[in-house]
Structure formats: structure tokens, C-alpha cells
Image 1 (cartoon, rainbow, N blue to C red):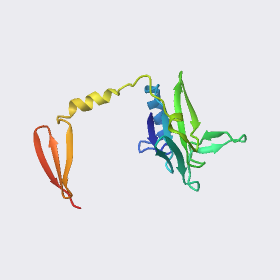
Image 2: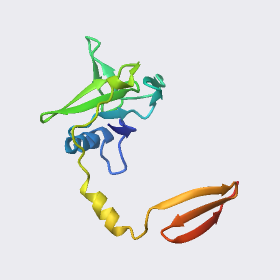
Image 3: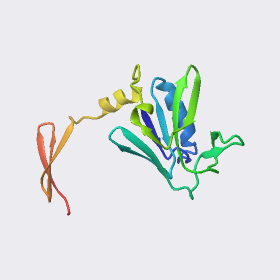
Image 4: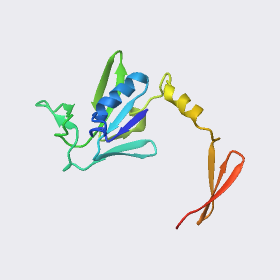
Length: 155
């Protein structure tokens, strides 16, 4: 699955994160999307989850006259978590239950599409993978390729 924190907020580029997340989900249409409002959290313990939120804060969850939840892009509701998936050309959203089994939220995708920018980043990164090991509370030794570097950290 894919997670979008601050789902109900507007990004620095002026786009609502929820709308941007929908565009991303369409590119990864076999993934489940989890949109977590700014004042909400998904707590996971083992195979169980629960939604936590600050009900006095603003969020994206409003309910219609039939008590059916719907998304408020102007944050006129309470904080919540949305579960999203692509069906055909449509993105379907439902409010996450307050608690339940993690198996009810997630499923394995049938395929994973790697973003083309991952390859570009790999090509532009001249360093080998970095491994960090803590040797003492005041030192971190970092191995970059064949070079050994030591960084002092303040504790």
C-alpha cells in the first residue's frame, strides 16, 4: 500500500495533497492508498489497527444527511483516514473504520510500477550504498564504498 500523510492539507506548490495522491494512485493502480489527515494517525499493534484523531481539530471527514461520510477539501469536518483504490478509471474512497484487522486495510498489489525518476536518481548518485554503524554513543562510523569515515556526534 501507499500512504499519504497530511492528506487534507495544501502543499507548498498550491495543490491539495489528496488530489496529488489520486494522480499518484492512478499510476500505481494495483496499490491500496491510505490518506491520513493532518490531525489523525493510524496506530498499528501486531495485526490490529485503530484510528486516532483530535476531534476538536479540522479535517476532511463530513457526513451527509444520511450519515454517509464524504471528503471535505476545505477541511470543514473532523480528522480521519481514507482508504482509496483504483477501479477501472475511477478512484474509490471510503472512510477507514475506527479499528479492525490490518488485513482488512491492505492487500498485496498485483504489480508494482517503478517511477522513472528512480533510475535517474540512481544514475546521478555516484556513491555506493551507505552503511552506518554506531560504535559508541559519541561516534558513528560510516562505510561509503571502500572508504571508512568517522563522524563525531553530540550526545
